[in-house]
Length: 107
Image (cartoon, rainbow, N blue to C red; front, side, top):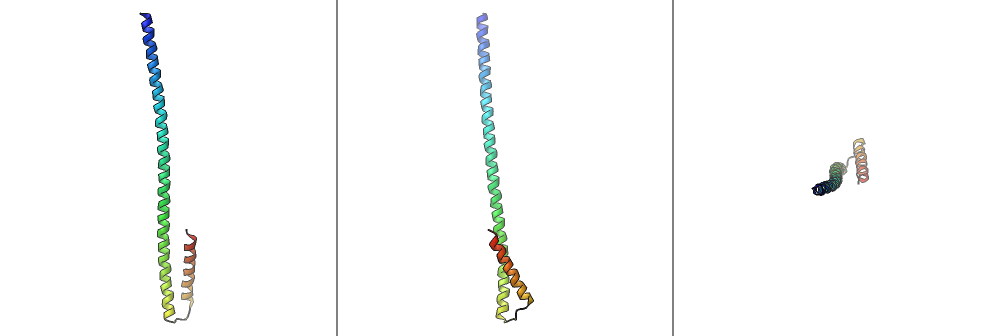
């Protein structure tokens, strides 16, 4: 009878050790999956941020180009009307050059 009790205790201890080992493995797997998910979220967030920055930069460039086009029209009108260059026209041309330089720097 004592022999049978020892066998039952050994079996119970073995089963508990097995369950403990399984739980430890599951914990490690969950931890690894969680770390992988965190890395994926980081990468996706970085990609999203880069995409938004690129879109914002593109929109900014479009706005600057629109301004330059308007300044070009002013220059064309002044040329067609044979206006003598004055400080306003020279100022507009200076602004135009600055804007073009700024656009070239932004890539």
